[in-house]
Amino acid sequence: MKPRDENKIAQVYKATLKLVKARGLAGITMQSVAKEAEMATGTLYIYFKNKDAIIFNLFHVCVQNSAQVFFRNYNPSAPYKEALHLIWYNIMRHRMEHFDESVFLEQCFHSPFIDEPTKVRVKKMFDPLRELIERGKQEQELKDMDSFWLLSFMMGSINEVVKRAVYFNKKISDEMLEMNFMMCWDGMKA
Image (cartoon, rainbow, N blue to C red; front, side, top):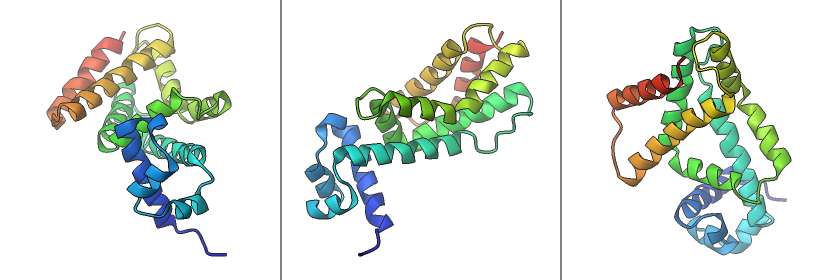
């Protein structure tokens, strides 16, 4: 049996991300992915049983990649605002640099391709952020409100800034990033 070619898998993932951004999850087929990946449809079936398998596997790759990047250089004992700033910045940069992945993940979370037990397992990977929000409330750095809403505000502001920058072809300078963090911080702080 021929060993799996990781480059071919990477081609499939890249093609899938591009197609999902352009057409949505429902708009892709095995044939369209194969064509975009510049391979025969039969070759694609060697690597993935069906479209669901591509989406499921790519979803896990994207989630793991996101979790690693979001918490890169994070020190849970760092001063609160510094720790939040680092994670906020990591998320913002990752979303800007991997916008196709962000679109894909958002669509997956709102689709039948990813079941509830998987969503629960994935959310656990991001527990350090939830724990940081809880710490902020305990230390009276953040508003005393449900962490769900604080996280929704933070992630919503990040997602909207990234989407607008991409869709309107706006470059976000380091100064503008810092201003956006401060607006987010001002909205969340106690």
